[in-house]
Amino acid sequence: MFDSIDDWLIIAVVAGILFYGSSKIPQLAHSLGRSVGEFKKGRLESERELKAEQASTSNASAPSGPAH
Image (cartoon, rainbow, N blue to C red; front, side, top):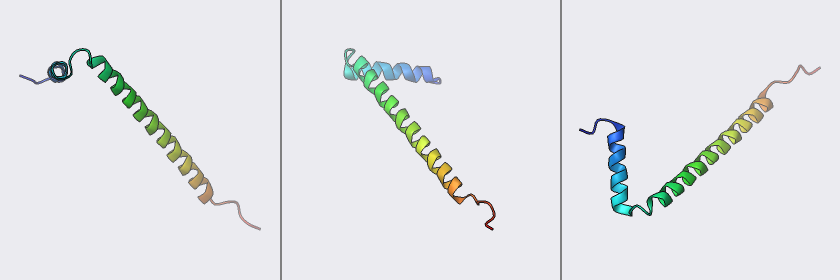
Protein backbone atom coordinates (compact mmCIF):
# COMPACT_ATOMS: atom_id res chain seq x y z
CA MET A 1 0.00 0.00 0.00
CA PHE A 2 2.77 2.45 0.94
CA ASP A 3 5.53 1.14 -1.28
CA SER A 4 7.04 4.33 -2.67
CA ILE A 5 8.59 7.34 -1.03
CA ASP A 6 5.92 9.52 -2.64
CA ASP A 7 3.22 7.85 -0.56
CA TRP A 8 5.14 8.52 2.65
CA LEU A 9 5.80 12.10 1.62
CA ILE A 10 2.08 12.71 1.09
CA ILE A 11 1.32 11.20 4.49
CA ALA A 12 3.97 13.40 6.14
CA VAL A 13 2.57 16.55 4.51
CA VAL A 14 -0.98 15.72 5.56
CA ALA A 15 0.16 14.95 9.11
CA GLY A 16 2.11 18.23 9.21
CA ILE A 17 -0.97 20.18 8.15
CA LEU A 18 -3.06 18.43 10.79
CA PHE A 19 -0.57 19.05 13.59
CA TYR A 20 0.70 22.52 12.74
CA GLY A 21 -2.01 24.05 10.60
CA SER A 22 -1.58 25.36 7.08
CA SER A 23 -0.31 28.78 8.19
CA LYS A 24 2.73 27.32 10.01
CA ILE A 25 3.96 25.08 7.17
CA PRO A 26 5.79 27.87 5.23
CA GLN A 27 7.49 29.04 8.43
CA LEU A 28 8.61 25.50 9.23
CA ALA A 29 9.91 24.97 5.69
CA HIS A 30 11.82 28.26 5.84
CA SER A 31 13.48 27.41 9.15
CA LEU A 32 14.30 23.92 7.94
CA GLY A 33 15.92 25.35 4.79
CA ARG A 34 18.01 27.77 6.83
CA SER A 35 19.11 24.96 9.13
CA VAL A 36 20.18 22.80 6.21
CA GLY A 37 22.10 25.74 4.73
CA GLU A 38 23.93 26.38 7.99
CA PHE A 39 24.77 22.70 8.29
CA LYS A 40 26.23 22.63 4.77
CA LYS A 41 28.28 25.78 5.42
CA GLY A 42 29.68 24.28 8.60
CA ARG A 43 30.52 21.01 6.88
CA LEU A 44 32.33 22.79 4.02
CA GLU A 45 34.27 24.95 6.47
CA SER A 46 35.40 21.95 8.50
CA GLU A 47 36.42 20.11 5.32
CA ARG A 48 38.52 23.11 4.24
CA GLU A 49 40.20 23.26 7.65
CA LEU A 50 40.98 19.53 7.55
CA LYS A 51 42.48 19.81 4.06
CA ALA A 52 44.61 22.78 5.09
CA GLU A 53 45.79 20.92 8.20
CA GLN A 54 46.63 17.82 6.17
CA ALA A 55 48.51 19.92 3.62
CA SER A 56 50.56 21.65 6.32
CA THR A 57 51.26 18.33 8.05
CA SER A 58 52.38 16.65 4.84
CA ASN A 59 54.63 19.62 3.97
CA ALA A 60 56.22 19.59 7.42
CA SER A 61 56.91 15.86 7.35
CA ALA A 62 58.25 15.84 3.78
CA PRO A 63 61.99 15.19 3.77
CA SER A 64 64.11 18.09 2.66
CA GLY A 65 67.11 17.83 0.39
CA PRO A 66 70.36 16.22 1.50
CA ALA A 67 72.30 18.16 4.10
CA HIS A 68 75.92 18.76 3.13
